[in-house]
Length: 384
Ligand SMILES: Nc1ncnc2c1ncn2[C@@H]1O[C@H](COP(=O)(O)OS(=O)(=O)O)[C@@H](OP(=O)(O)O)[C@H]1O
Image 1 (cartoon, protein in one colour):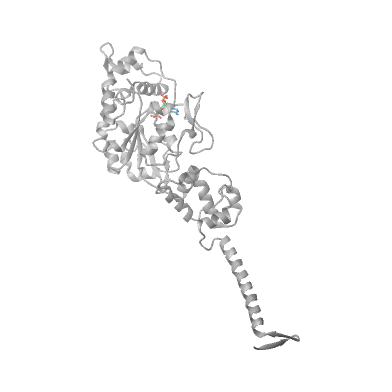
Image 2 (tube, rainbow, N blue to C red; image 1 turned 180 degrees about the vertical axis):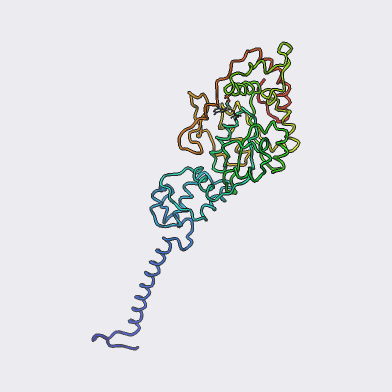
């Protein structure tokens, strides 16, 4: 056995070596642990989701503000995405999440942001202008504005707020002009526009099919008699000097001869217009919203619209309340604001009083058209 003399003490050399080994081992272990901790906290090593949750989220309910105070950039982005995209755990949304996660999105939000608001911000920044893949094509006074405003609160829908009238009045301006009007959207989002006059424009179905034969079309239909009165009420509010409703609606009232050349009457002959659309689109590409149920059960109607568009049902009863003053359902939180909002004054007007007999005559006139329409779409809208 080898011995060495140190400070007057004789220590066996093997003992001295093992002590040195333990010392070096302990130091390197501590050093490794220190490096490991530093590196993990700053996210330069790819941590697993569960580790990340344990170390930096602590708890799923940690507030955004708290998360933002932490200086772990990678974790911060993940946490923000997780918190904001609660509603985006459905098909198509993963792309939006990934886009936002992969991009160096500056986190400057100081308040909690609704998922839809967050998606809008991301889309505005990172999305592209695309031609619409869904269109609300009619009918005038059917409730088209309500459908557009309600569906656009969905985080995967981006809608043009104004009516572009591209396929009727502005077709000569070309598709690039039309595309330029659209909001920026992510690949996973639906681009939507509404122009109610398309439904009765002869060229519109062919033109829309030329743009994209896979377009999804939404038609909001309403009792054609009430629709005609609503239409007339709107025109009267702009031009108070027009003839009475009765004068315009009939060629010869005593004979019950309805004037089908008057637009307010013609629009309600839904089956005739639909036949034109069916030359270019399959019935399964067209979804019909009941204008009546849209008022009594907006969540139910919007549920079906979401299904048709292939969206997760995010818009539910929770999003609506009935406003007694307005007499209509309103949104608790519209797309653009956090305040409850009803549609404008021009939606839900008090109608001009029309003689009961006139209404009956028009009801008789529309009945055969309605029946054919119900048969074609496979739905009874109960207007008779
Ligand atoms: N939630 C809610 N709030 C207000 N109004 C609602 C709502 N849901 C459906 N409606 C009905 O929508 C009718 C207007 O239809 P449109 O938006 O298609 O009109 S337009 O063609 O764009 O001018 C409008 O017609 P009028 O009542 O005749 O004004 C309403 O009955």
